[in-house]
Image (cartoon, rainbow over all chains, first blue to last red; front, side, top):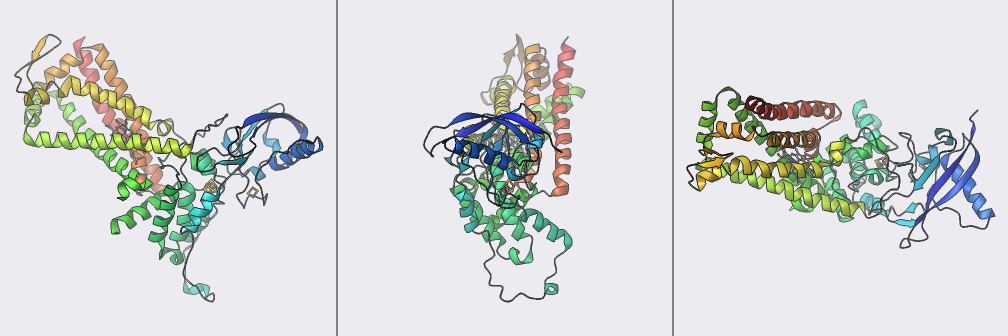
Length: 251
Length: 227
Ligand code: HEM
Ligand code: SF4
Ligand code: FES
């Protein structure tokens, strides 16, 4: 059994995109260690609602690490100090009794704060809309054996495809660059025969959308890779660079 | 033009100019080592290069590379600051995978610029420039030196502990710059995969260390000789 812990929460509160935000302090008592971070915030919010106060607003959906909605910057790390988990899969047993836990929204110009801990991540959707798909009409499913893909390639595509679009890479990056996300979304298709056909067009379209939206220039600091809840590798960034440079040299 | 209006293009310019500078450093370091063995041979190299047309063309090319690298470095940093926004985290954690050098490339680069300025003043001004200006002699530390007497100039410069320390600081900053810069440049060109990432980092560190040691050894030996 996990012990119960008590701790201080220091949470960023901000009424609206333009309003000036500030930290609010909340004391949490006797929280069981097997409470997830988001459940813990639910407990806080229930308490706030009962007291007639405004609850803390935060993003979440699946609560099982697959949707990418949860997005908290906890104690100096996106998705908390533990590696390779999303905020929804982070449990209170990872924190110490009496600790102060600081919770902030993603802070990057590409992700402006909407309210409290929620940021606007529609820029990611725009990048996907720019080319993160396969546009051929595939018709009825063909026999799997007619298009064979080696285990290594399938694994690589799968690893890239595990990106959940949470934005922790941008949140962690001192350059506000979205390269890890964009490169994962380019790679998951570029390595497969179905996606290869449009690889050059896709790389160009998604990258220029990323630049247009004001994300930064990647300088390979590797902060994104270190903080990504899905351990997406910067090798994807090398692949995107390669695809893009090849496409531009051909033009 | 994609080399200026796309983020990857801008990075390619950083990368190619950076790698060209690394190549230059390698040649420069190799020539310096000659000074350790023979002052006459070193002066011969100085005379061969001097202010001949090919040396001047190379100097202009090198200056252009350096200026492009620096202008792009400042431009990139400004764009990245803007992309980062004005809000900062109250608590900023560290990840051990993130090297200190990679977070401080502009600071390191700025120290390198100061070093270059000092170096131009110490050597280029007294050698190539002196030749262009058709001076037969310049006076350094109270001694007359001809524009192709490189070995003597090294001797005079590193007799000063201040210059010795400044040059070593400069070289250290350059070492840090390149421990990140070397593999990063290849990564930017897309020349990387899971296996080669680690290999390039090892190769980069080893190469950088050799080049910097090559420079440092000349500085240190001439300083010790002067004692
Ligand atoms: C002998 C001198 C120099 C050499 C050999 C050199 C080499 C390099 C290399 C190889 C890179 C990596 C490029 C990449 O990541 O694609 C780089 C990046 C960089 N350099 Fe230099 N550099 C030198 C001087 C300078 C100077 C004088 C400055 C600035 C004042 C500077 C600032 C930067 C910055 C800001 C980056 C970007 C960081 C990055 O892209 O990782 N460098 N340099
Ligand atoms: S690359 Fe990782 S950190 Fe970035 S959006 Fe995808 S899952 Fe999140
Ligand atoms: S809520 Fe879906 S990944 Fe965390």
